[in-house]
Structures are given as structure tokens and as C-alpha cells.
Length: 493
Image 1: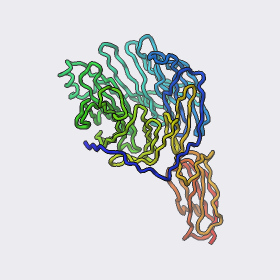
Image 2: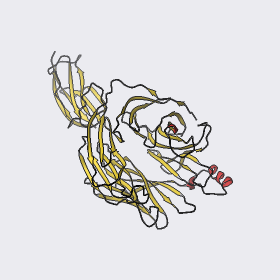
Image 3: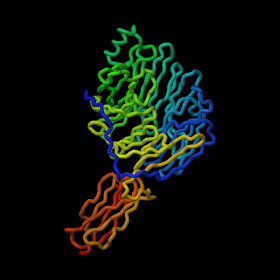
Image 4: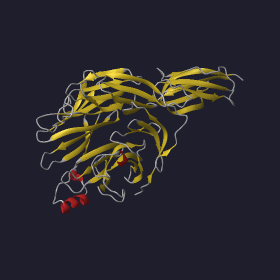
């Protein structure tokens, strides 16, 4: 196992400017005491905010209305729906993709534990459509987290709690299609623990059943499901944090168990768990936050938070670095395979290296709250009493126009006629794969000027016709493999 304790290498780019391109306040007068349960952005740039009202603040057992707000990339409200007490035991999670919006939470029944785990899809108007409701008359079910992998793959983490005194939480991840039909279920119950761990409990705990007392996070790749948590509950002397990767047939590809006292990784031991998973595009590695409870008070302090890079294929730790944060840390993977990391009011764009992280830019706005990554930056949502403070940050280089165009458009080159160089400009409404090509009058490809992912904005590309004959040429703009427009230009020598 390779472990490198290091520091974050900082290389702030002087070309990157901080630009809040819009900010707005959204009142929530119909809710009394609320909190933001989740925030998510779809691939087409729509932002959705899950809000939970809690009129009995401080009460663990009862919640009020659940609300979903939707915004477009310009901050216009596109959805504002109150779903009443559909999740009267807690609005847990929200996910969005090009196929729709999904919300999950729990329904209260007759005891202090939720008995129903609920997952719903919303149509374009925000109406509740398809649902997946998991319930039982003998055990309590609870929803925890949903994630959208793509437009036809929704993941729903839920648990089953099998009552006292041997209370045991068994965790499952249901993979669903866009209609919430279950495709498969990944089983992360205690029954699948390795013999070496079971033997410890048999020898030292008199056969006490090891409890999956905390399931922390999960992430899906083409080859399977990775999850983390820890085992060993309130009555156990032995606790282990774990990482377990199952292939698509539920076979264990690899699993790692770390005892609470792990002097190999931390001299002070007290290793708790991994969470906040975020993988690179090729799923060769993933970043995760690691909590080391050095003072053994079971409270996450900033100095106890670390970031780690782990090999996806083997589970081996590549490096561990200090990264002070509380429970509000967030990590996002960007199109260029860099990452966004939020801790408190600070948001940093970083690049993973062999030994740690290089910081590309960092923002620190006092009204930064929970964020979601969007084209060219992020959207932040902060609760400020009876209203939400929402803003969009857009990364700029100081060279390109920072405004977001209302449409995607190809402009006439300038100068025209030209000899030998000209400039071709275009506007892009959303981040996309862009191809800009030049053709002869016979339709032959002369040159490909651009073929890459491009951020939303106004852009200019130079074309040099040196070596070409005088005459008429055509240039064509394609976005996501669809032709947007073609225009004519004249090379006159």
C-alpha cells in the first residue's frame, strides 16, 4: 500500500478572475423553520434545491412540508412546488439529470423508526410520477441518498433496521431505470463480511453480531459499485471502517477493512470512515474524505479531516493529505477531470497529482453555502432565515467574454475577404463538444480548427489560409455532433 502524507501544492492561476454573474434572494414565507436537504444540477444546467420544513425544531421524529425549487442557469425560477408532508420523517435527497428530477425521503408510521423508504420522480411540471416505496410490517425501512449516474440509471441507498435489542442496520443500493423500475440491488449487509472479521467477533465478542452501524457513501462505475462505512456498534469493542467494491454480478472484487486503531496509517489511530467519494472520468482513482477521530470524542473536528486518493482497481491508498473541514465538505468532478472542493465558504478548483492537489483557483465569498457544479463554475445556495441566498460563480480567464449567450450561434468571419488570416467567432449557450471545420466548395475537408469540450460563452478561433488557393471556402460549427450553422468566406490573395 502506498501512502504519502503531504501538503497541498498551491499554484493559483493569475489569469482566473472571480466573477459572480448573478445573485438573487428567494423568499420562503410559507415555511416556518427549514433547512436545505440537498442541491443538485442536471447536465443541461438546471439547478434543483430540496427544502425541508421542521416546525418542531429539535424534534427528531416529525417534519413538516417538503419543497423543491428549480432554477435555470440565469437564476430564473422554473419550478416551485410544495409537496406537503410526503416525507414527514425527513426529506433525505434529490438528484437531477436530463430525464427528470428524483426525490427521496421517509414516511413516519407507528413507532420511532421510519417504516417506509420513498423514492419519486417528478415530471416537467413537478408532479409526482413514478415511485419506489419500500416497506414492511416487521422492520423499519429508511431512505438515505439517491444519485443519478446517467439518464437511465438512478441509485437509491436505503436500509432495513431490525429492532431492539439486537438492532442491526442492513444497507442496500437499488439501481433503477428512469421509470424507477429496479434493475438490480447491491447488498451491503453484515452477512457478506469476510471470515477474518467474523472470527474476531466470535472470539472476543461471544458471537455478538457485528452491526453495520454506519454506511457512509457509494459510487458507481461501469464495472460495479463501491461503498464505504464502518462496522461495530454501540455494544462492540471492535470497530472497522471499510471499503468494498462489488462487480455487476455482486462478486467482491476487493475489500479493505481498517481497525479503529490503525497505527500503520495514523500513529494516533482512531480511524473512523471514508466518505464524499468522487472519481475521475475513467474511474482509475477516486478522491475521498477520511476522518481520523484523534481525540476519540466521536465528533468531527477540522483538524481530524483528511483527503485521500485511492486506486479504483485495487483499493490501495495512493496518498493522504491534510484537508481541514467539517461535515459540509463537497467534492465534484469537472468535465476537464479537475475537481471542485468546498469546505465552508471556500471553493477551490484543484488538479490531482502524484503527491497531492494543485490549486488552480479558489473563491471565498461569505455567503457561500451548499454548492452544485455547473458549466464554468458553480451555483451556491445559503439559508438566511426566511429566504435563500443564491448566486452563480463563473470562472473567467480575463480574455474571453464572461457573459452567457442566450443561444448558440456562428458569426461571420472578420475580415472577409481576408489574406491570409481571419477570425471566426461563435457563441455557446452550454458547455459542449464543439467542432469547427473548414471545407472547400467541393465539400472536401480543408482543416479542423477545433474539436474539443468548450465552456459556455463567446469564443474566437483564428484561421490562416496560407498555402491555400484563392477562392470561396465554407466553415461549419457542430455542437455535440449536430450541425449548428455553416457560413461562406473568401480568401483573396
